Length: 154
Length: 269
Image (cartoon, rainbow over all chains, first blue to last red; front, side, top):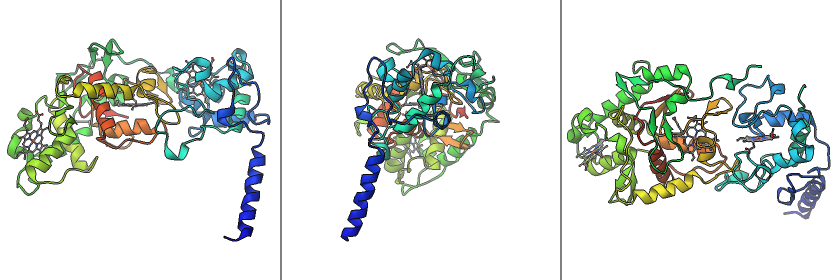
């Protein structure tokens, strides 16, 4: 291979690393007393993107288990879990971040809620998903930003 | 606000009668079972789906049963025999047989289900090839044989060979979380039984209706196909059909439905 190709690959890698420099990797997230105090990305979450990630079946698919009145236009809300209406009255953003990152560290190991930014997962993970969390760090921030808008009386 | 779960989220309180035969859809659970009562998946389905299963003329799964009857009488393989050559009328020879599977296969030293027993007869008694997993003939013949047990309560003999060990292994797997989503069978069919997971009403995940007809796909679904689908939905690699894992699960899951009538071919959405 020509040296020039290696060079540009290295630069691309460097740029990619810089873009994620501020991002906390799944295994480095610390859930303490049911909270994750710091943003995972250093960037504020976007509630609109968060609502999309929450409803999208390939991403959060949170509606599989939770109902959200504000997302009435989405079909089929599950009732495996409590509705998320008014969830921001019950939990601080730091707590919501912990719940989304790894619900089992908040509700206990028996919780059926998946950890969306955790690598403590089940056995035999599909090969292309090994080592990958369900949501990206930014998607977690977006979802937390959206959840923080869910106040009762909205 | 009208959400999908505003429909009744509990199993219905109704009787199921198919071809004048009353089905046991609720049974006292065997000892050691996590529930007090075992419930047929039929009780969790929508009215239209329930009605279709209750009417053999409307049930599209009966086409697979009829196809199975044809195959039963068809000569195949180098020995020039059909199933009927040895077993005559399935209504007599196969009556209630499907309700007792899986059994212990002493030669293979592992559990055997109807699909594998069919293959055994094809290879050893007919000089024919074993079926590929989910081949049309495999599903049809399995449906036909199970249908001869319509109404018979599921009852395995766990003292047969080493079935008890496989039951233990199956139980362990039932509670093992798999995949990126980190769910065990029990997460959905035990902890969340009776709830809506999006549009799907979660049942106890019983095996007594298999193979089942599914409106979704417009075809029959075998038990190992269903197992694989549920495991895939946890975002895990799927074990092979008839692998040790899935045979152990079949032993354990079938036992969890002890006392429920065989309903093959059950109807699901």
